[in-house]
Length: 121
Image (cartoon, rainbow, N blue to C red):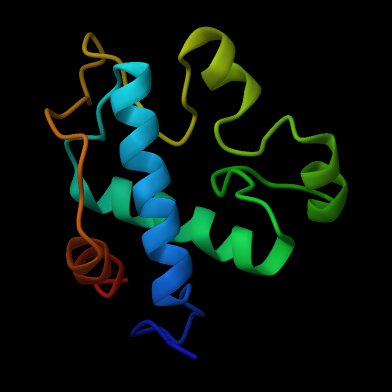
């Protein structure tokens, strides 16, 4: 098991790479961009990967849930969530439209970049 500097559980390399590839593909397909702050992108992808491992689905990591398993079953907040699919509104700031002031110019990130960012926390 991997641990961050504070001892928090990190996703496996396989899960992290799977979610990284998903995020890149979805950004390209939807015409959106990752946040200009690479740390935001990294933490969100890590959170999605952990939820995929722990819950079986990439539940939005930026929300509080009374019952995560029930939320996974409802699929509303599984990434890409309904607000993202319907209105291009990403609460997590992972997928941002060009006109968003926090949008960067990247649609790609490496596993090494993700680990470098998430290991800061």
